[in-house]
Length: 170
Image (cartoon, rainbow, N blue to C red; front, side, top):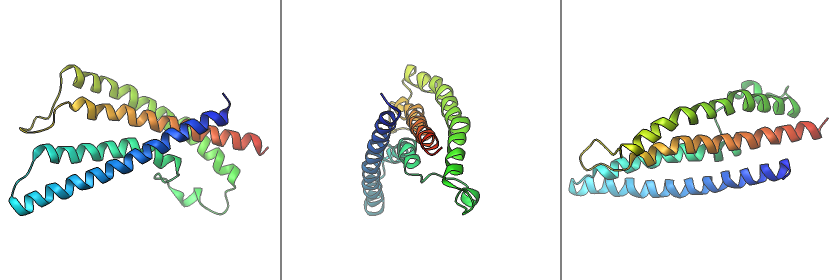
């Protein structure tokens, strides 16, 4: 498999997660509107729906990060990066260095550090401490290593894109 094929497949995964995230946002909005309407009209609230909103937001944030990185919409200090005096080649070097020495190690660290957190939640069948809350909290916690795995994959794809660019533009 060539580098361009690897990049292509990772980009497809990130696009898919972006579309999934868009549907989750729509679902979250429907839940919020329903919950707010029930409280405003009938003074009826649901702890489970409230928690579901928070959980969906967390999943959207974690799973959507790879899509955001793919489309270069992540947070970055653009004062230097977007300045007119940096060439595309210099930007590629910055992205390659940042991906390899900052993004990827950070993702690996979070995946390793979060795994026991997820495992313990699964083993103990952790649920919400609130009456009427959601069970199976390990599913939400599993979104942490999943989200960072997806982010790491997109970081690898971006680093490979920059490497290919730098090698082709010698």
